[in-house]
Image (cartoon, rainbow, N blue to C red):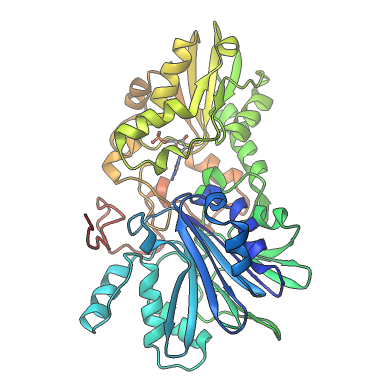
Length: 463
Ligand code: AMP
């Protein structure tokens, strides 16, 4: 999972990108970077860590120019280290190019092998670098044609931003799996992962970048083309459930509204004899509000989240993850003591969070705990850019509902059904990738389902 942001036609391009990345920080906290062009050279700065810690006034003042792209990273292929931070900037025959990518390519390992046999040397262990090599090898002249040449060979999920000396180019894969929106600001254009980044810079949302669309923006204006074979849209449904910020507009609909709808549906499907509805903050809040409204049970903040701790998932080891839940959330005794509590969260992955928080509110005096999940069981890994564990580590892949309830130590457990999820998201029927729930992968995989999503680029290890 990653966040991308690009702007062209604004004198403060790097400052806007910095702000945009701030708004997209929830999409990745491992590393961040900005590349900027003053029409002569591309300058860039990237580092491990959070946006606020990486960019100082001094750094930003050195990123000169009216066009820039930026990236926040949450690795799904390639390890978490500086060489894999983006934007990825290279110099080749026709000039310099910077790339920022959100998504995962499913045939990158095959292409990488072929390129290496042909003499290519890779600097990183990211699938994104494959695209750069393919661009460099293309025989076409214009950069946009080279990009099309390269992308015609890759399969998978990509929302991509390219920055050359004088152009900003955006491409969304033919299924539109990962999000990308187009906006404007004072004569300039902005393209970014989520509309919340536009809100922060007081930009205006124009529309989604369409699946399979390529936008080329330079001083003459913007050109849109559809250089790939048309394919059915498969927007990631998990963006609605968990990943996008609730204030973002995704596929034309406010994410917060959809999450509330999911909560209402959950209350209809799985009512509970209870006293209060409590969200697992922050991800469960809108759904819990929906559940509360539909059930008539009061909404209470039974957990307080420490906002200075990173997402539990970012932690690399199981031992740290267990610890992470505890330092991230604490139960409010005054709220839950003696109560029958409905706990609402958006999803269960390994079950780590659920088990810990149930223990926590029982210790704080809750009488009964009824867990309600505003999505269907996550039973399949994502291979298109969301960090999920291998299949056997997904609790819903290997356990029945009853077994999960027992593992969590809850008094009851209810998930949303697949059909009710579909009914709550706009544009019912086709149009979404829901492989994490259904196992139906819109882009055929080249790895075994049971494989990890990370083995494509192991790279070397420096000790
Ligand atoms: P787990 O503790 O493994 O069951 O993870 C469930 C928690 O992680 C829920 O509170 C979700 O909000 C959150 N979550 C779900 N999917 C992801 C993801 N891909 N990355 C980070 N957190 C996630």
